Image (cartoon, rainbow, N blue to C red; front, side, top):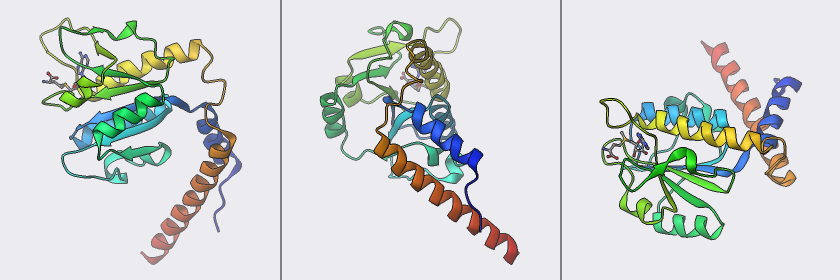
Length: 208
Ligand SMILES: C[S@@+](CC[C@H](N)C(=O)[O-])C[C@H]1O[C@@H](n2cnc3c(N)ncnc32)[C@H](O)[C@@H]1O
């Protein structure tokens, strides 16, 4: 029987103790599986607190889409977008919508050390009217070439790494943001899942 080894457990702990609970991302109808996968992986790398998403048809992030990265990120499908924005604003989050518009500020002018929700728009239509309605800040990544926009997963990476830079400078990766109760609960869940998955792989391998 496989048990989670010390090294892997340490890695899981490190993720949870450095998790930026107050930095979150909302994918507002991002539809390409390739982009979904790339966004999930960057969110994992920066260790964002939570990833929200909605889609043209209800989808579940799965191994095929994310190559497993979604397993380590708290994520939630959003059905009621109005309620979602009202709730997150009540919790004190600033809503930062990424947009290709005149009425925007350079993305580096925002203070990402505040509780922040970054909103990414659809590949064709951009962010929805509802997201724009709830925006506290509308940000643009300056473009100097012929292309009008970046790929949405690239835009996500550029902004998240600015947030990561600001938060590191402030020592925000050195102090846990999740409660000890949530950390311990999540550790148990992850370790359990890890064992089950490894065992299933072992049984499948034996059968073939
Ligand atoms: C391909 S773009 C959407 C283009 C769409 N035609 C529009 O006008 O919004 C997809 C998403 O990537 C993000 N994005 C891409 N380039 C950006 C930039 N230069 N500044 C800010 N966000 C950008 C935004 O979230 C945008 O909604």
